Image 1: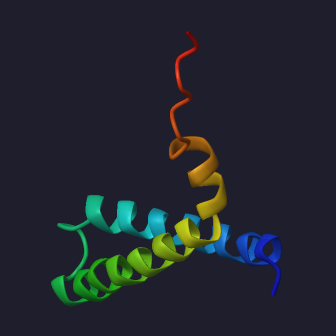
Image 2: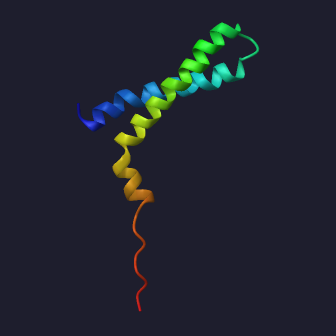
Image 3: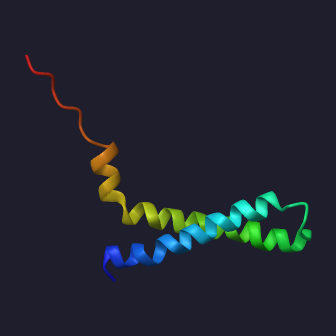
Length: 75
């Protein structure tokens, strides 16, 4: 699968997983503890995996944007 195609699939999944973390975090006291554990705890593991994959797929952009070598000063 091409990188851009993978990102087109991955980005909406990332949005849903992050939204799940926010909603379950805010609704912690409103939902049963067992449900919270599955949705928020499991969602955290999935979110971590999806975020790592997102960064891996965007690594060239990260390098180009943030990890550029400093240019030597002109004399």
